[in-house]
Figure 1 (cartoon, one colour):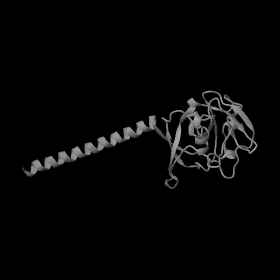
Figure 2 (cartoon, rainbow, N blue to C red):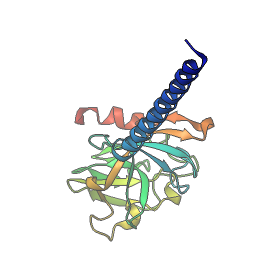
Figure 3 (cartoon, rainbow, N blue to C red):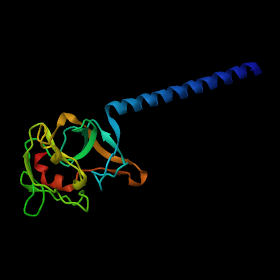
Figure 4 (cartoon, rainbow, N blue to C red):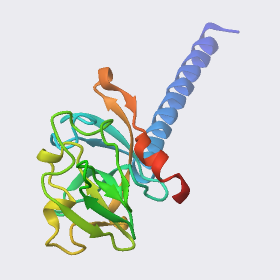
Length: 200
């Protein structure tokens, strides 16, 4: 093999490597865009209303293919003011949600919620009393930092008496990815999984 033909082969090999790298890069970008459009979304926590579960500035991964929304889920939805919002689902369609029982606990269908695992430590279930039957296809949502949350309680004069439609739900928050020091999987609190197992 001559020096000239060897040089041509090396140049051809380098070009092939560059083309392959570019192809893989483009494929990676396309996959990332498709995942962002149809499967996952990144959402940044805009306020303190979900502390201490989620802090202002946290980044969370939102699963758009989450299936049916259940009690206890953390959902991102199109909020009352048109902005994307995140709250916890406390009650679903046909539930009766009430504040409060004799021990100052929120109840759903008469079942008291033990909210100590996620409620802000300086907070209480609710500063105002309420009792609502959630319409079918709608959700009653509340922040974990109740005294700092504009949630279903704050919009009772609007359509659905403060509830949101299931169609407004963009997805379920499944994990904190930022900052790395707070990275964690977001699971359904035990009070919901234990009290409402028969509804699943």
